[in-house]
Length: 214
Figure 1 (spheres, one colour):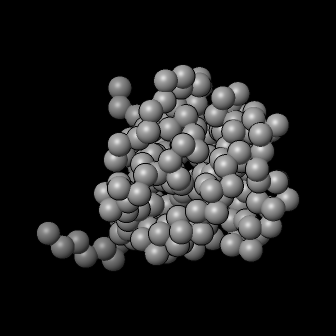
Figure 2 (tube, helix red, strand yellow):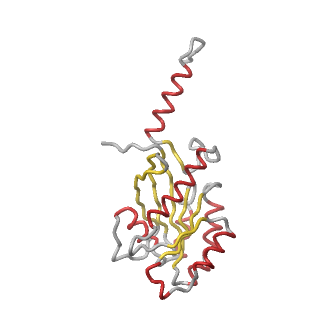
Figure 3 (tube, helix red, strand yellow):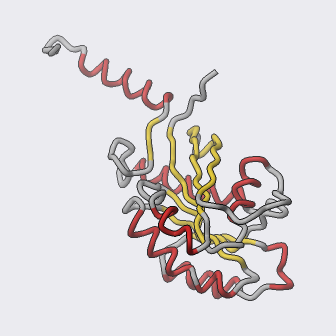
């Protein structure tokens, strides 16, 4: 049976190597921790259908390599992304310091209205923390980002991160700020929504004054 959903959103998971991006994706898709995680080479992909605000939404998620040598490859995947998780490791000051560069890439290469949620991963390693919650919150606020701390190991706040981002995208669709029919928006109507739209347009165009062109 084919999947049915109201919307499809293109998502990115970006950030420095070793921050746990692949583990976040694996935990979200499979609901378990990825034990033998190596550095991503190029790009990995996963998808999942979730319920957001009463709508069924399919997330297509691209997990990009964080190593500098793959940046030219991964940048091509930014185009037309509706949402992104910008990930750093709370035990790595270096990964936090690199966030500005990743953010610049996302905002210049992806959809102009991309919704970005900053993720402080490895919350389970709090004893080894190098970046405080307050400091990260301040950075997020200054850069107009949503923010959560997560643990790919325990699953804490992983689903919430994707839901929070998706909720914001859906709200922007409902206010008209995002248009699923605009090329490059990172959003598409799914079968459910298209059927409703088609039924609505059929009723509108079936009046007595309809001059159909073949």
